[in-house]
Amino acid sequence: MAPLTHDSVVARASARAPLSRTTSGIGLALGSALAFSLSGPLAKGLIDAGWTAGAAVTVRVLIAAAVLLVPAILTLRGRWSLLRRNAGLILAYGLLAVAGCQLAYFNAVDRMQVGVALLIEFMSPVVVLTWMWLRHQQRPSRLTVAGAATAVAGMVLVLDLVSGADLDGLGVVWAIGAMLGAASYWIISADDSSGLPGLVLAAGGLLSGGIVLLLAGLVGIVPFAVASNDVVLADTDLPWWLAIGGLGIVTAALAYVLGIAAVRRLGSRLAAFVGLSEAVLGVIMAWLLLGEAPRGVQLVGGALVLTGVIAVRLGEPRIAQEAPIPTAT
Image (cartoon, rainbow, N blue to C red; front, side, top):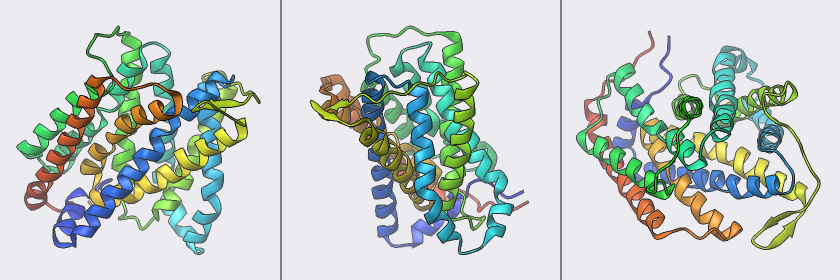
C-alpha cells in the first residue's frame, strides 16, 4: 500500500528547492493557525448567546463544506476517478481529522479543564514524530527532539497549567482520542502522492465529517441547540449569522485549505510544530476579542513554543539527508 506521508520526499525537495518554498509553507501554516485560533472566541460568543458547542462546530463544518464544494468540483475538472480511487482517504480524513477529533475533544472538556484537554490534544506533533520514526524509519535528530520538548514545555505555560489541574480518567482517554485525530490531520494532509488536490480533500473531508457530526447531534451524542441572539465580541454586538458565518468560512474552510497547502510544502513534522502557534494566537485572539488578557507566564510560554519550532526546523535538514524515500509497497 502507498504510505500516508512523504516527509522525506518533501524534505529532500525542500533542501534543493528555493528557500521561498519553505517560507511560503510557514506563512501558510501561520495563516491556518491564525484562522483556527479565531474559532475559540467566535464559538465562545455563540455559546454565550445560547448555542451548544456541538451545534456551533457542526454548523461550522457544514458551512465550510458548502463553501468549498463548488471550487473543489471545478478543481477536479471532471476527473471523477480521483474521487473513486481516494474515497477511503477522504472518508478517513473526515472521520478522524474532522469529526473524530471534534467529538473526542468535546467529550474531554465535558469531564476536565479545557487547558488540560488542549495540552493533550496539542501533543499531536510528538505523535507525528513517533509515527514517522516507527513507520518510515525517519529517526528525529537530537535538535528536533530538543525542540519538541521545548515546544511542549511552552504549551504548558501558554495554557496556564503551572498551578495544577484535576484529571479525570475517562476525560484523559477522550483527550488522547482528540490528540490522535489531530495527528491524523497532519499525516493525511501531507500525502499528495494520490494526485488528489488539497482543496478536494478539504471539501470532501469536511462534508463527510460534518455529516457524522450532524448524525451525532441527532442521536444525542453531542448536545445540539441553536439561538438567534446577538453575539458579543470586543464589546460589539454582532448578528448570530455573521458569527457563525465567520466560524465556517474563516476558521474552517480557509483554515483547512491553508493547512493542507502548508503541510504539503513543509511535511507533517515541521507543519505540526508550526501549528502549535494556534494556541499562542488563540490566547492573543481571546485578549483582543474577549478581553481575556494573557498572563506573563503565557507570554513566556509563547516564546518557548517559538523557540521549539525554530529548533525543529533546524533539525529537519539532517532528517532529510538520512531518511530513505518511502516507496509504495
